[in-house]
Length: 72
Image (tube, one colour):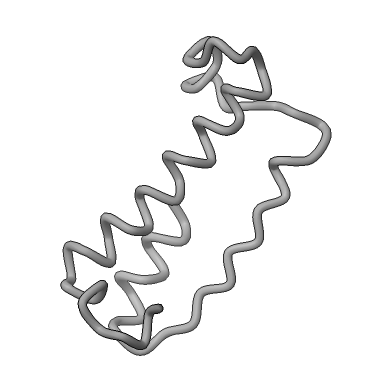
């Protein structure tokens, strides 16, 4: 994921603007997420977005950057 690679490359002093446009039309979840939700294709899209945010938070947590108040 590009945002995770950016965080790992830049280090603890960074600004990440993560605009999410995939919650708007057209709704096209990645094949990996299709059929994962009981809420249809839009639910699959939300599952993909949830995964992406989780990957970013996991990266910050792995580097112990979530403990720093600057992030909140």
